[in-house]
Image (tube, rainbow, N blue to C red; front, side, top):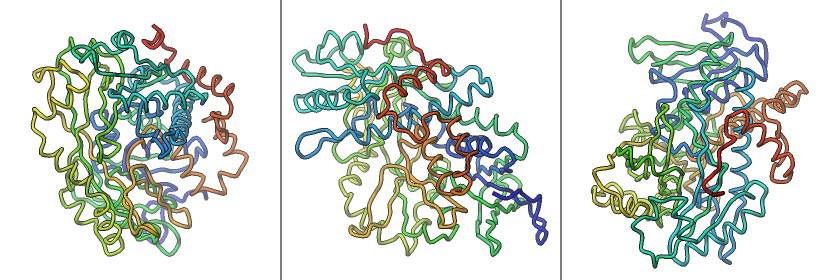
Length: 511
């Protein structure tokens, strides 16, 4: 990337190397990564709200599991022949290991203190009941422990053992009901809001970095000289701010799709968004909170989106232990929790109308599921909770609004339009702009996603020895598959866990 000029001679508008739209986990990760790779880069961050990480990255708006496929059953589907496909689980586990390495690098380099504010140890468990589900979990465990990434996973069908692991889940349960669980002692709880704000604090201290909060991006257009002209309005004063950038990253969560459409790049045509909202039941009884110490994931209801996989989730939020159950899915036309009800209708264009209609027709069961979720009564939500906590009492729980997700709809050559449940990076052919669309497991795999984005959008710089060396310093397993290198995996985990304070006391799985 060329050395930046302070302004454009023709317009007197400031020129920077990078504009990051959205102050969430993705922009924070990319900004820190780029400044490590090339410290003299100039970066401007534009955020529509008055604080960082207030939407999808906020602790109350995401699951905070540290998605590593240890407990998420939707990452290990059962094939038609009855075998278990663990390829996605291995991929996600590899990506989360990269995230931990990058965080450990930052923690060591910048002497970050109070790491417990954003990452803590917590056992990750999968829990199922019924003959068919127990058999599935047994086969899943047998397949996963063949991988070095999952070799420490423990499986049990013994009710007495499960009573020791997860007493609240077992109390009051029918003794005749067949149950099973797996436990991974390497699990984590991550407060991505705290982590994001911590990285932005580090970024803000670096030269050449400016932040503008309460700024909503209205226009972005590439000019004849190849620079992107970004226009944003101060939501408080109405004043306009214009900046030119050599590279633009759209990391605005659910707000990324409208901005991608405004960019006008051909690669962005045909993408649509399907918003899914969520709610939690939050435990308000300290005695109940104190008796559960795990993230317990179950199987999603038929027709439900992957982000709605039910889980009983111990969290550390702002230094306080919390217990959540959910999420309960819902529907809103907003693309952001603090967005507009016009977000969905205004995103519909001629280029994405057909894919959206086709995807909608193919996902009628999902639509029906969301309608049923919206119509749920407090009694219905309590009944769902009691499948995991048989003795749950309504007075111990209160409803909380969770985050807003926008699932990706894109054109498909054969099927016309498909609904995706992962994340998707869309970039221009010249690499001058990129947008991140989609949801889970985004935050947990942000480091891997941003490494891929840098490789795609900065190919010449990435190929240099200097950038290659820095990648290896930030992420020691860079370019390698930990699943194929058990010894390296053990060495890296030992180091990252020591730095991040994740060398845990005895896990319940070992008791």
